[in-house]
Image (cartoon, rainbow, N blue to C red):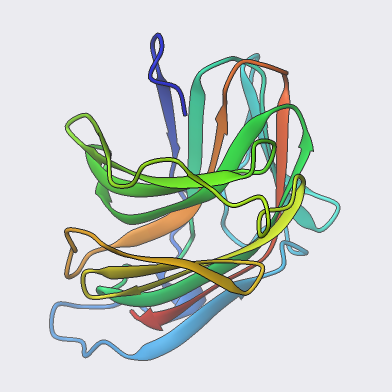
Length: 215
């Protein structure tokens, strides 16, 4: 994620009515229940967004979800087709940088386009960091280099959120536990891609996405 120049946001929210897919249509009186959502992207109608233009392409490809970014300093994320979460959940996915020099990761604790967090993993330079958007970007952590634990293409990424604590795992290694300003309800989550402009296009693929928690 670059602080140089203009950063563009393309927030991808599926237009498909997806409440029945994961846990029924919740009401204000419904009791949250612990459940899970898993997607191996073998079904192209599972609810993730699909589109293409001159700057990006995103959708299902060969049993994976693929995001292609063709422009520098572009940030892109797709929200998962599931109901809102509470403040306790675990999300995980296989992630692979297929081409370019860029980042992947998760968007989490998403309330709206001006209030969310991003876990950014850069496999090329083997670092990670957490950002928050709250009417502008804020660093939650510094850049943390982990060449021993972050591979330069494929990584299994897991994030565990409980209250205001976030645990970050890469390839089943606990790298850090971080305190953040927590949202308590109405939370959405998803996957994230960014370019840094060095080598385009950036192509990231995601597989075996899973989230479990209180819906």
